[in-house]
Amino acid sequence: MSTENTVMSAPLFAGIDQEEASSLIRSMTQIRLRRGDVLFREGEQGDQLFVITAGKVKLGRTSQDGRENLLAVLGPGEMLGELSLFDPGPRTATATAVADVTLLELPHERLAVWIRTHPAVAMPLLGALAVRLRRTDEALADLVFSDVPGRVAKALLDLADRFGQPEGDGVRVTHELTQEELAQLVGASRETVNKALADFTTRKWIRRDGRTIILVELDRLRRRAR
Image (cartoon, rainbow, N blue to C red; front, side, top):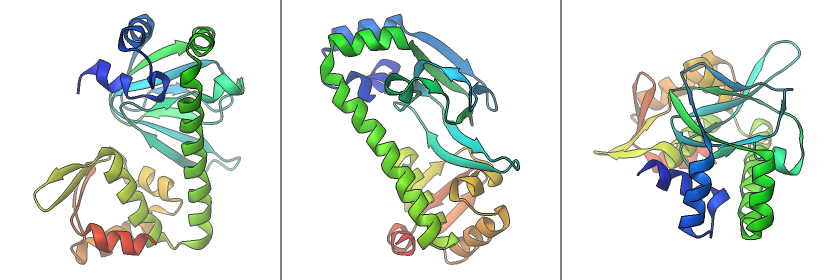
């Protein structure tokens, strides 16, 4: 998929004439980050929206005692910073590249004009926020009602849905996350998450290869995630 087609899949451009959307894309500023670079930090003032064109970005928060929680991993075609359009204020999370990343930046003033002149995109933008909120609600419910192996299975399936590629008898997921980051995404200790992954590997539900996991028994993982 070309860069422009990737960007066009973002809710910001839903239902808009391609020529107009292309004009806005050309006016956006391109940003490149290396793995580990921080795009913005929790608590900072920010009024830009970003669209990822390549790579992955993690959104995380840090508690007062220094513990980190990974809220989401975003990839090509996904947006971040859109909350600033509806509620300008401090950033609610820290955005960090988990692989080499290319993004397009749109300042709040230009975004506001775009919304006023293309009101049809407001609903897709609100829909994107609703999806993010729904994921947060589900994650909170999982922390209360699901055990760690169930949360690990669900996280693997979500990563597969968004970043997976068919391969032979399974789905290859290059998640780019360290063991610690994967544990933060699940909301458990690294040791407990590794134990769940080892169990899934022994059962031949998955195969592991560094920061890549091949999901083989998707149905069994779905049942375990319930």
